[in-house]
Image 1 (tube, rainbow, N blue to C red):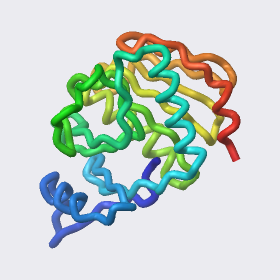
Image 2: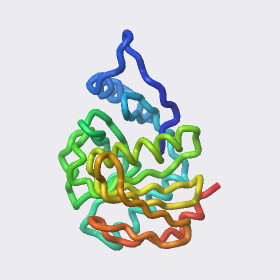
Image 3: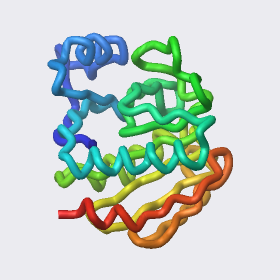
Length: 197
């Protein structure tokens, strides 16, 4: 899922605060998911079946290769340099039971990898390819995996430092992608080509 609409939300002339955003997000309808990145409220697209199938593909491969890790979907995270942003990655990979008992917007500490799957909308380029890597790197999440249905590529970003990932490795769907430590597994991307329309 990725943002469908992205525009600053004004409240009596001032930008929305993190607290106001959390209140807004708590009252949003169940089928609507909101994010707050770099001062902007974004509405995430409702996922299609192919999008969901990609998440299931990831969960299956992680469970088979690394059963001591958990994969959570749509867990809210506090991101950006001072934890002023709020993101809902399509999935996060964490040590087993790491997120048990955590609030809706949990700390990114202990998150090993954030995962996004692009949606077919106008904001994908800005959100998933620019803002999300920056926000996750600023939050010191070790890995960011982007499954890009527009380009039919998987990209792993690693080594977060100074608000960006120092290393990026990209493979076309059909080739294996090595996910480095701390996740340390190889994903077979052959199946991802089945989820492109």
